[in-house]
Image (cartoon, rainbow, N blue to C red; front, side, top):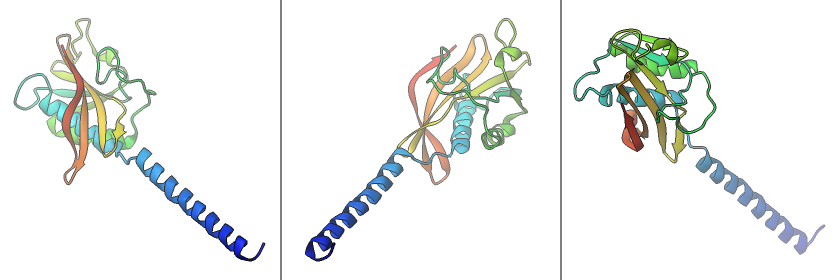
Length: 182
């Protein structure tokens, strides 16, 4: 192939190639927002224990923090949250969560919350609270994180936080959807 037809064909081919590259870059950046799971989860748990601990204003009253070492299927809703694959929290997720919780009291990682509850649904350790966190999902530059807090049969909360990236890191900006309290 040579001559003006070949030159026009090559120009069109180059334009098609450039459109394909630019188009795929745009699609991948829109469909894959970067969410730092450990930091998003830690910010949500910190908000839960300091603001929505069910004891009104003031510091959290708990003596020990029993944190589920796997994603909590009931985080966000006592009857079951959004469906996702249950997995163990990564070392990075556990470290980030423990870093924000440890200043408030001892942290113990637990496998099954049922093993840590009495028949009356109180934690077996008096004054303790059981914390669960679900899989974060992203929504553009924001993230949703379902969480749960259980401190007794009539003491618990389940909700989902909306977080945004700020200069100070991930911050809760709203509660998304319903809140369940017992």
